[in-house]
Image (cartoon, rainbow, N blue to C red; front, side, top):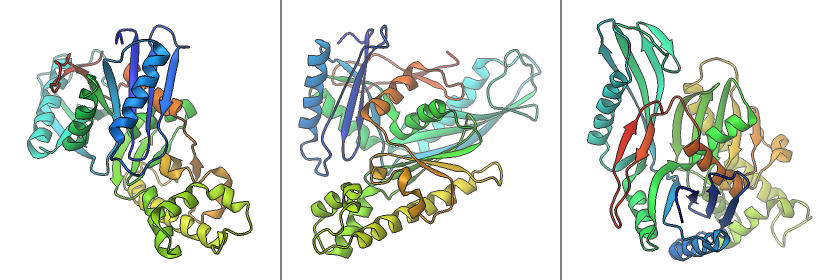
Length: 369
């Protein structure tokens, strides 16, 4: 595929793979494909190959490069603050680059098992004045940066690079899926104030908190939708496959008076109990990073939250303002596309160098593109 015309995005989750390819010259031309829900990853390579074949058939082009969207229970965020004295001259991008590179080296030194996916400058303090974005044409004597690094485990990055390399496909850029989705949905919904996007996956839950357009924090909890499945299995004494089926058919089961020997009320209590636990844990992290005492709005998303929707809000005793966002493959893949093609003033733009076949790629920083 001619990568100058089409951009292809693969969102590789722990229970489903989604992909979309976009014509950058024609906003109306895009194609999507996804796998069935799965819990066994042993044939993941085959699922990905089927999606590749489907997209190549739709576009009548070969796919040579993709952008990879992934999450992991082991991903992490690290905040660093660095400062530099200047001589009162005009602040230059080179001054910012120096501090970012210094911070990056500290991350690479101390987190050797992780790859840096995103670098976000949360705050510029210039002569004791805070700025969300770098102001133009400003002179200063002292500057400090608050920088947030979002990192993904190296082993999962290499795992997917190996899978795609078998199809002779190179990875241009690696994106934290939940982070990119939160930016897209925040802009689409046009939310303001304190808000947090809770992305419930198969075995993790991401918490991305914002105040207006400014990201405050990024946390990951090692708990997700699969824990609800295990609760159902343990309490109802049924196997995991049956538990997953009952969980995913939750809405349909509510319409029935019974489910064999299993009480619908019992199933509902199990699901909502674990859901409330996840929400309460998320709320603790949200409060730690809140700018005000005003309640923060929660937006639930992700495959692990699909058992719930806004009609069940009154069944949950958790008191926060919660909305349930039902995602599609189109929504998710468009989040990656908009992230790559959009302009985020807080983020240091990571531009990948052209890879060689079977190799790993290096990155360099291009500031304020």
